[in-house]
Length: 467
Image (cartoon, rainbow, N blue to C red; front, side):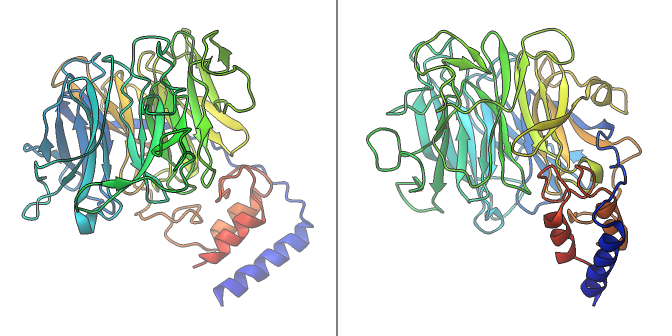
């Protein structure tokens, strides 16, 4: 009945307006602040959550520990979830150590998770399990899924994440030094460096501990490795999937001139070449390995020149598309930053164009409790889609985690959040419909599918969850 009423309201509204809705879209560049939730960490490199777990955050320390922050009690647990032996990670500038964490999508059932870390001249992806007796403790036994030689100490990549297809994506750096001296990022046979890998881990069992999806671009071919999903990356430092759309965002660190954000839309085929080492951003490097400007290369969606000022960057830190509840008008906004310049930015991307590029520096630091946010090593999100920032700190014990919050305070509504609940009052009703219709044809509040325009598809999505 409610849906019939809603359709009637829509028909009446459209007839009256004759499809000429002239209301101005509400402002989408929404101010934010940060709130420090914990400190005393040793070089935190990542913060994330286990599937469906709204009570805890898991924090990586570069020196080898996985810590737990209890969101219910607002306390950092004294005993680590797990501590492993790593090579490096002992200083703020050290690019080695414990770098990545991904929980299996069925973690609540199988208890499996994966760590990416550096060993002695190698990069390693290993599988672990949580303790059956204590969910805040993991078993120390490890199963190595992948390992590969790394000739230098820098450019290790380190991000991992499960995509909407259930496969594990692994971002690897080009192996280091400068200018990728052995052209590893463009080499796709017997070379895992400078890539986005994509594998399907097995649940328990014996070797092999993973398979390569047959839809990987070089599966079964002699022209490339089975595990490769994409290549031509220099040092993909912090990547993410948009939890609503499934789009993949990649923050790729530049060499001497340009930082870049790369993108792959959900459902697109693998095999993209992002251009390093013959291109850096949109610039030609003059190095061999591929043809700069070739139509076979995928250009970035956003670049930042190595320059002073609020638009310049030197070491990009990729982020997340906001899909939380606390700040409804930020839905679809991608937050990211730069480790060296301390700039923090946001933008929207609809698959074709970027809009609403915003410098967030004065909103991010100082925090509402007066602390400087100035060593941004990573972004992360909790189970409800709220975004956090890892401040690595300049020394051991100086690391902190900050939460991005609304200027007027967060918790505008109780999660889980429904995208069509535009005013976040817990119900999809006439108020939301009025907002959508008032912004018809714009990119304002009501762009539920985040394609840049409020149209019939967004109206259908709202009516589908009416009430």
